[in-house]
Length: 401
Image 1 (cartoon, rainbow, N blue to C red):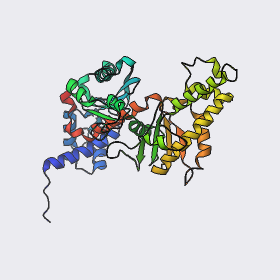
Image 2: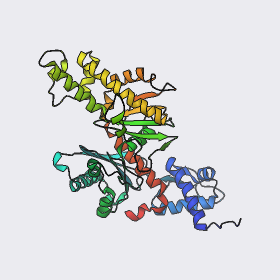
Image 3: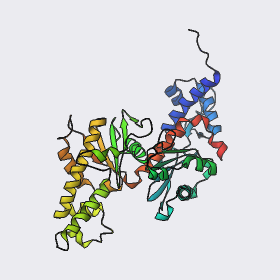
Image 4: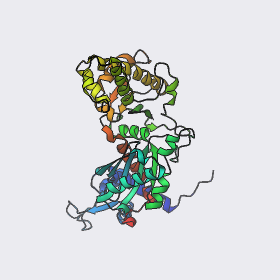
C-alpha cells in the first residue's frame, strides 16, 4: 500500500485542534502544561497559540512566573476566550418562544420569553417571533458575534433540520424554514432540532442523564415527545422519527399521545363535571379555566379524593408509556421533563411502584427533571456549542467583530 502524504496544513490543523480542545476545557495554562497535555513540541504549541490568539479563540495572560534564566523570557500563559462569540438556544414552542444567549462555555448571559397568541398561527408570524426573541435576548450582545443558533421545535426533525413527514399540518407550521430565514436576514448558522431531542441533550449535559449511558427524556406537557440517548449518543432515525409517540394511539390502556399536563387537567375537569354540583373536592373552588396539573397534584398531596383518583388514573397510563420505552430502548433512566416536572412527584411515586410489573429486568429509574421549563433552551445552547466546537477551525471570531 502506498502511503498517503499528509500536508503540513493538515498537521497544523490537527495540532490546533488538540491545543484548542485543551484550552476550551481548562482554565489558564502555561506552555509547558500544553506541551505535556498534547504531546506537541514547544515551538508547535506556541505557534498554534499565536494563531488561535490572532483568530480570536485565545488570549495570552500576564505570566505569574519569573523569567526563565536560560532565555530571559517569562513563561507564556494562555486561556480560552469564552467571550470570543456567543451562541443562542431557542425553544420555539406552540405557545411560547424562549431564547437564551450563552458564552462559549455555556454560561447564560441573557434570556427572553415571548408569548405566542392564536393570531400568530402563520408561518410568517412564527418566523418573525423567533427572530424577535433572538434579537431581544441579544440586546446586550453584538449580533455579529453569534457563532451558532439552535432552535427546538415540537415536530420531528431530520439531520438536515427538515420535517420530512407530510401528514401533519401542525408540524409544517412548527418547522418552517427557520434556518434559511435567519441566515438570509442575519447570516447566522442555524440548527433546527426536535424539542425533545434537545431536552435529552440538556439532561445528558446538566441533568439526570449525567453518568447514564442510556436514558430517555420524556417531554410531558400537552403532548408526549421523547429524546433518546443510547450509549451516550442521541438517536434520530432515518427521518428524525425516534421519540415520536403517535404509536400510543394503538397502545392498549393509553390510546393517545396526550401528555401529563393535558391528561391530568382533562381527567380532573371530567370528574368535576360528573359531581354535578355536589360537593366532594377542593378543586371545585378553582376556576375551571385556570385548573392545571400542578393544582391537581397539590390537592392529591392533601388527600383530596378526586385529585387522588385522577393521579392514580394518569399514573396507570404513564406506567404503560414508560414500559413501552423500556421495551424498545432498554434505558437506565426515564426522565420526566417540562414545566410539569416541578410538581409531578406524587404521580411518579405511583409509576415507580407499578413499573417493575411491566419491565424485565426491573429497576429502571423514573425521575423528575430539575431543569425546569427552560430545558429545551439548555439543550439548544448545548447543540450550538457542540457545532461551534466541531467547526471551530473554520470560524475566525476575530473577523466577526
